[in-house]
Amino acid sequence: ASNMAQREGSPMAGLSELAYLRRLQKYQKRKSDYIDHRLHWLETSCEARHRMLQSAKDLRHELTESIQSGDRNKFSVLFNTFHTFRQACNEWDTQSPVIENMNNHPPDYRSGSFLEGLSPDTRDTLLTFLSHVSFDPFFLLDRLLGLPDITFTALSRPYSQSLTGTSIFGNHLRQPSDRTEHENTERFLDFSRSDVLALLLKLIPMDEHTPNGPFSGAWGIICAGLLSYQKAGSDKFVITVMNAHLGQLDKTARHYLDTWLLETIREGDFVLYHADRRPFRNNKGQLSSGFPNDDAKAVDDFFASAIEKLLLILKDNKLTRLIPSSVLSLAKSIVARLDPSSQQQQAAPYFLCTRWLFASYLSSLITSPERILHELAHRTRLIMEGVAYSWYVKPTLAAPRSYVL
Image 1 (tube, rainbow, N blue to C red):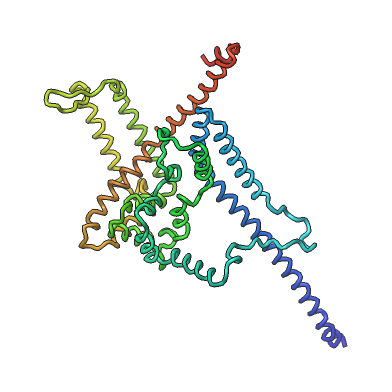
Image 2 (image 1 turned 45 degrees about the horizontal axis):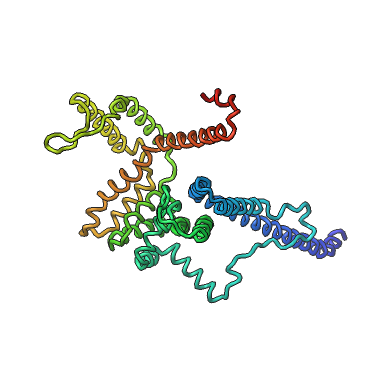
């Protein structure tokens, strides 16, 4: 009798269990939508802050220039634009606060995508194009080769450089003030100008992410194709892609590099004592170093010894790891995909060694302490300019002056 009662009550128990699972499913779905919504806004905020940091150096220069020139209108426009953008990032961080009770039918948190506003045909076309760009290196290579030379060259331009060619030292050919202010604001907010290559680097898997997959060597195919067709600006494009594969030095590489730098600076300290001697031309018209014969020989011996030690570190790269394996695999992929009988393959190792390894990578790596010290001196000068200006405006403040002096 008890078994019959259990069988009779089992349908109701089963329905209750299904109803509970259904409610739990809806709850988990709402919670998942909410998490997706928060993730969407956090990704937006992180990307915006990253791009804001990229343009901060250029913006700081523009603000400094406007202060020096006394252009209050330009300063206020750029300053307010920066703070408005930063406020928007803060709002994205705090978008949709957590709701205490998820069972009280919270609103739909699905943020949606701009693709939902497109027609099905347009959406399919766009997704197909993005799929080809991400997973078909030959398709992207054809698109890059079809770009005008000016457009293709702009892909490798650093973000801090301006399309109008203005330099950090200013431009003597001044444009109308209203146009300049508009371009300055547009330059700060226009992230797509120099982020196209960064977007491609995010879309296309790198070799270390797909070591044996069907998409391994995608960037090797693209770079080798550009070098084969001798596309104008392809050398800078390849160097930019190589630098994007670098990442950070590991502890072993940093140890060997720091040791070499300290030994080189310590042993070459005597060179600084002759830095004030200007070079001169001898009777044969040749440029002399300005050092006495003994000192000149010591300087040459010092540089020869330092270069030899650096080359030994590079030679034993399996131990020192100064050149990351990701870049080595990319370089090998580029050379391997060039035509063996072509002039480009014969010149590729020379190009990668001179133009990237020594002229770009090692040059930046070795001089990084100098750039840090230059920045330190620059910031110290800015602080002292502010102190000196306060003395000029309020000469009665004698205490800070005596402290600094």
